[in-house]
Length: 129
Image 1: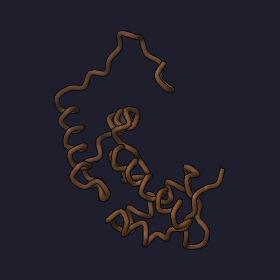
Image 2: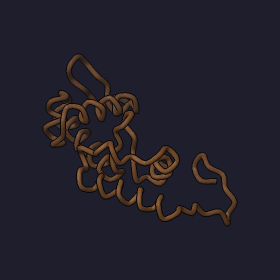
Image 3: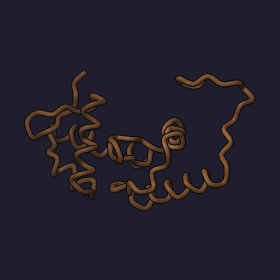
């Protein structure tokens, strides 16, 4: 057992050269644009789900996928700000993450859905408890 997956101990996922190339191109694009990931290289669902299961990618909305490392950095940046200042606006999050409104909004809505933050008017605050 690995999380929600069950497999034989001898089973290992084997990717063909084309799949490996797609994954490499996608991960390279995420590394080059960590807070504004391009949507045109997102691999097909099976490959994307593999990357998500491995923690290499996090899907925050349809067509918006961040590298796992960038996502964790973003969460840390936002939560550190909220611990210090208690509130953050979408514009502040956008500026702190050096990204566009589109990506900041999707990310902040994702944090709301994960109950890391909650929206209060135009601000976000950390969820208590």
